[in-house]
Image (cartoon, one colour):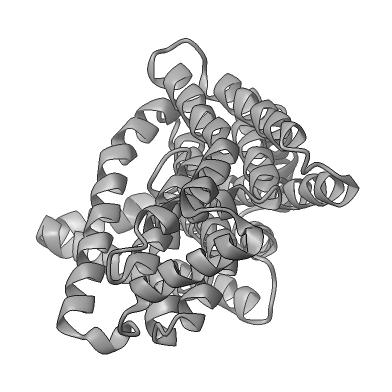
Length: 361
């Protein structure tokens, strides 16, 4: 069994390190193992699994949430949310960093993806923080930390993938992630306040006052008041907050299935961008292309993940490994720590979705 595990891991790592996408690496490893250790006849399982997963209505959840996220990201909603938080917290030392974290929290509830959350909010927040005297590593670290909320706060795509693979209720997974996600966000905010208090050099002195003075100058030049700026951004962002309530509310109350709620989210996102008059050819085509690429990648990862899972199960590797661990008398917490170390290392090399597909089965 040990030799089989080593061979599987070696093939997979080689495929990944030569630059194969995760989905292709999973499929390549599965095909090699079937040809070398099982029977070529079992390659027909690949077609069977592909058909089953490709025609499963539950697979529509992820693409619909991706469509929702892409339109909101390309429609400038992240900028609206950031502006609201920034204006509201401008008098607090470290307010821009707090604004970034809270904007990541709200946008994560619209997006469901850590990379998309970090990219959308970071695109506008990092430059503003650096321009106002924030130390660059502190600014980037704030965005990087806030971006991780995308995999915890619903509608998390990682939860969707986990639910599909393990046949767990996606609505219950979303409910389970909401409170921890909010708690993590609040702890990020507390950490920012403590760090700024202990090390004032992280933030330029009188940054809040400078921001207020800049707003007064803008108002004198016809740019409007700070209150007006907040009202303008709030008016643009309110529909997005309503969309969060609709998507999550319909799921939590049982009014709609996760797939139907994702559909509401996708249609709602498109309508919001249209009503804000931000829809154009580039936004529409770009969002659809990006959604198609990401959805195809996820579907192929799921298909090949199931195929590799079949080969591992057929060879008895999973059961043998479980029996070995149980027979060794290893403490359950030691096993948990080993898993955390594994995910920590993998997190340096791949995205959350790939980690879920690769390890959960």
